[in-house]
Length: 121
Image 1: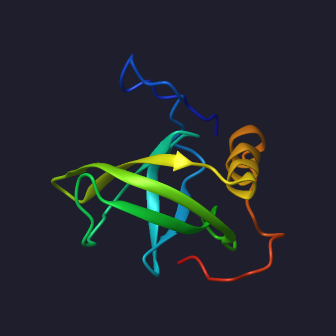
Image 2 (image 1 turned 180 degrees about the horizontal axis):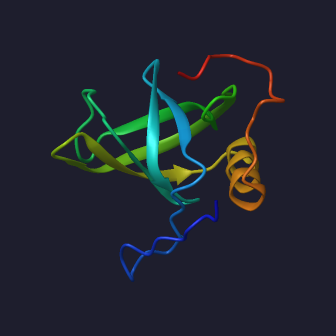
């Protein structure tokens, strides 16, 4: 299947990618993305405590069906929408975080070869 690039907002600095879907470890729970970029992400089915303006950390990132690569990415909640969608902006990418996202973006790779730290549902 061919990936699509989604331009939701013409002011957006980074292109959003809906595939591959990512799994992110936030506050000890794994959440799936609806779309993502090097600038941020949109989570689907979010049912946590974060609200607009909150800062938090992403501690793991991976492809669905693989393992999570350990990362430390600071982020800020841009908005929480009805229906459980949470939009967030990265406040800075660590080298490991950037390399992981870049690899997924360029190669559409899964992280099956990474050592498992958390299983992805």
